[in-house]
Length: 280
Length: 280
Image (tube, rainbow over all chains, first blue to last red):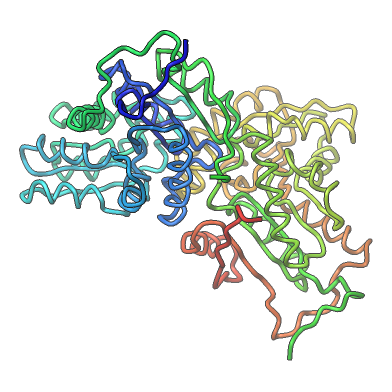
């Protein structure tokens, strides 16, 4: 038995998701939870990770290659599960293709604009995302009465990847990065990088219980569901047993990715394939 | 007046140097100091940095593209100013080209083998370099009576790039990474990543004054000089005023590279050019 995707029923096609590496798996995890019927094709650019310290031009070129790769998998939508790529590349790429795209920035911005009570919002992210001021732009469009402060936190990703999720060093670095935002009396903090939800408890402890943490991965999955539903693309049926529900592709070799992925997604990645992304 | 390089006098050709990003500039600095007459063409793969967490296959593919690029500049030799690329790619690439290549690992290994008194050597480097066990292999070839311990230190590069050269956090991380090596009573420590000389004083303080730190960047410049001399390739004359003595190329945009480079090389980088390295 093979699962044939009819041209007339695009809802059965998979959702394409990409990130610079492994952080986007926090978005995949939310999609799996909120839309268990959906098939997913994930691409992690592990050979060129990270994006957050690189230029708009380079991040856009890399993202365009990945979009071309995902298109070869006949995806029904593409989720840019990376804040830096959402900030730098999404606007340009969605003009170039016909399938709908969604990034993590807009849903995170929307949630923050709706959450704040005192009108003071903080954003923590990579250098690139903060430099783009994209969160400021989206939040100000939605809510004129707010002030937004951005803070680049370049050490959080390496600390997460070193496994120091609960550690005095991560506490110390978090205190340094966040002290300005605490002094500014923000009541809402956007975790503007897909790695940051993994140190959510440290960030929450440092910020204190009066500050609401916004996780764009979670908000993106909600918005994705609404978008698919509105377009008649939501898969209402559970995929057959024979179908390949979750497919993972990376640009570097697969061992390390599989190890990390299995620590984030309880489903079990089982396998991943390597792709020469420079050829797309 | 134009400077024409005669086919018969290869000594006037530039030295090609490459690294995954900026760390290799510590090698460039040593070459400038020890061989002030030499012209240098540097390539930093800033769009795909870092290499130290990636696979042998990927690092070799990237290094091969860079070697092709440097060949278009008619270099007389290529210095692999990156420990990870020296560990993973040098053996394979030097078989593929006619010009002599030199990496940072062999000179560092040689200096350590000659330095140790108690036969206990430590190596700190990226995951990739430690995993390759290449320092062990070279040192054991030179000195059978030694024991070598390797320790991957993935947070040192981000800490250096964040500018925390003298900082309690860097001290704390250094103490954790180095404690095993201290307990093992090593008397020689190889700084097996080109970023590490920039936190030399922290590493020296943590290890204590009885441990000699070996800087492969320094040793490589010495060995390069000897090799060029032996092959009649050493430039004995100061280049003319009209010549372009130092040229810097990178794969990402240039601004950030120039800023960092100027903090390492007192000569002043002035300018750098961006190259699409995937086309090589």
